[in-house]
Length: 105
Image 1 (spheres, helix red, strand yellow):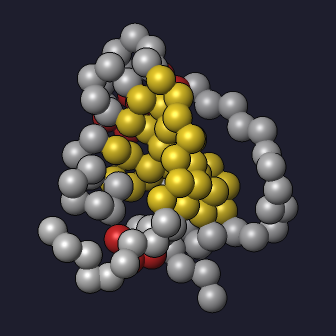
Image 2: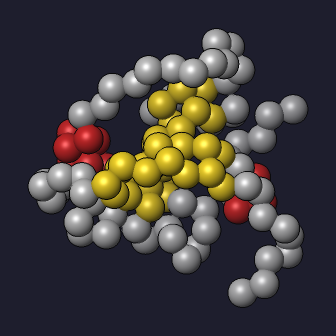
């Protein structure tokens, strides 16, 4: 069974993040269960206000290294409904394992 990565206990992913100078991140990943194009705030409440996740591929078919091209500024404008800052200032690889539950605050 594939779990959607939209809750903290099931939020296990590897991604590429575009980090902008205004503190906002767009994080792109391949989801097991969420539909392509789905946009969600980071399920971790400590990061939800600055990190937005975008599903670029979905499902198990074709699992392999894949090449993706994105218009980061168009994605930023569409998601945040305002022009983005110049940049991004950094691209980063992220891996978020499923946290131990319950998690201390």
